[in-house]
Image (tube, rainbow, N blue to C red; front, side, top):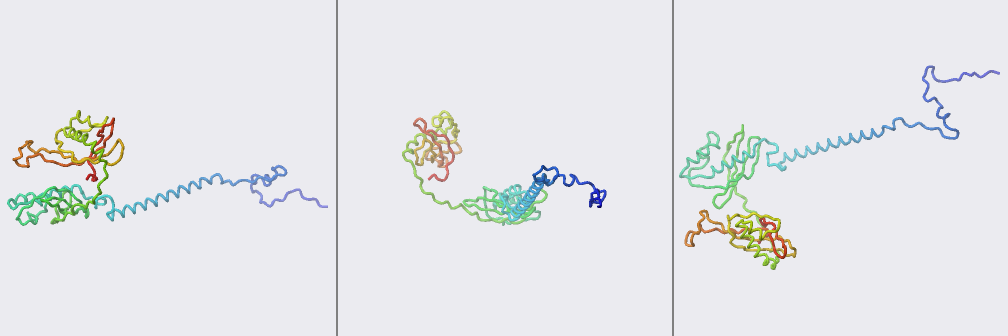
Length: 335
């Protein structure tokens, strides 16, 4: 009977490293009757790093996309002129403020002329006109015009050197606009072409408001208090004013620059609260410039003028009496 060889046959090539742990180690080490323990995946502990990296990457992509879209939107707003800045100022280096001042000064000279002294206008225009321009810049030398109340009204910037400035003015009983083309270079301006007179759009149409409801009983109760207050308000005497002003409140007066003439109207909205917002129409007497008090037979221009003014007052009732807490200009609800 042949003997079995004691040498264990191993299919591995001689010299291969031994596996670690040795094959069958887990099976042999497990207690009898229990399942062998499986080894976990060695890379599982770093999986959260992978997800964190992906989250950061996506956040960067979103930021880049949002910034790109916003930049395109802002550029399109500038190109279409729908931004909040005046036309031309967002993308142009044109100095709009200085151009407005230049155009205002030019309009004050251009729109005032007198055939009795044409040379004076020509001399003043030199500071605004290009070399070789007509000395009167289109005026034929006849007639007379007087304009004032010049005010910058707007600007249309064409490019870094050219713009049209609108200047409002008043001449007699009418208002108008003067469009002034200007050229800018090297810190200096010049009127680049003939200006253009344009009509003013006129006043806006104001809708009518219904007459507000009023508390006639409180109006009658407040009238003596408000008359005394406005007399003291005109004089500006703090001792007198404190008789009509709420505790802890200080109101400055006119210090005699105006004189109280009449409390023409008091309007109190309905409601029984001890704090009310009321409106009052007051007539101030405004002394003539020379400060004299002429007799009725003299020129009416020397008589004190009367100006109606509308005020909104906050009044409070304290100890059964009304006191003024605040005074300011009224809104258009005053009838």
